[in-house]
Amino acid sequence: MVGDEVDRQGWAVLPKLLPWDECDALAGLYGDSPAFRSHVVMARHGFGKGEYRYFSYPLPDLVQALRTELYPRLAPIANAWHERMGVDVRFPATHAVFLERCHAAGQSRPTPLLLEYGPGDYNCLHQDLYGDHVFPLQAAVLLSQPHDAFEGGEFVLTEQRPRMQSRATVVPLTKGDAVVFAVNTRPHRGTRGDYRVKLRHGVSEVRSGRRHTLGIIFHDAA
Image 1 (spheres, rainbow, N blue to C red):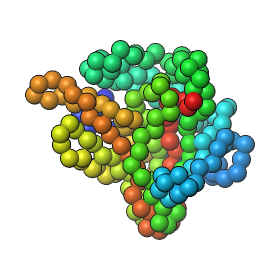
Image 2 (tube, rainbow, N blue to C red; image 1 turned 45 degrees about the vertical axis):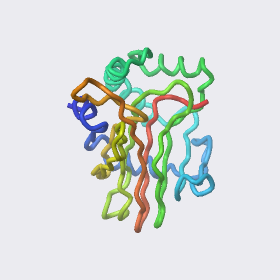
Image 3 (cartoon, rainbow, N blue to C red; image 1 turned 60 degrees about the horizontal axis):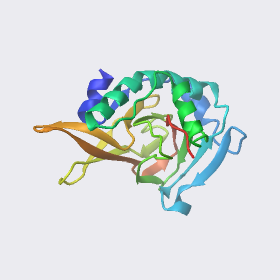
Image 4 (tube, rainbow, N blue to C red; image 1 turned 90 degrees about the vertical axis):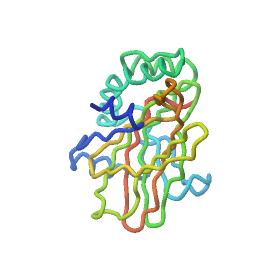
């Protein structure tokens, strides 16, 4: 079960979430286009090397469908996490209602994005926090096939537990797979009950080729 895996390790793989032709179609959108609201070159901001573009509204049909259909499967996990961590906020059953909450608070800019990496590019460890309203899980879909389209470029998660050194995990993905993972913190059950674990994510250096990823973030940005 995805919920059990996410509870145990902070992430879970959804294998073959997208067929290859849909991966290619999404990757083919990358470039100057009205489909995107902004273009970020990572090196200019100290984020790493590579670049990404945030989609504008209305989102492409496939991106909208993924965001809408994944959210209700993850909302029960998010609510259970908040209960275990003693956080009062709860999440509604549908993504549309959650977005109304975000937009009412001034978080109205869409956050799904396409990322592109070439040789020597990487993404520093980070968290995708865009305002006060944060959905605690997000997803990334690999749109390129490792060892075919690119070498290197592994998806990396680090976990920081209280009074312990960070632990790194390389998540194995192939083209069309998605990884669902914690945006910021998650509960971890210890011998004395639950405590909070902080996660960050990034991408290791691409040694050759070109790597594309779709990022699905469920809260919008201020």
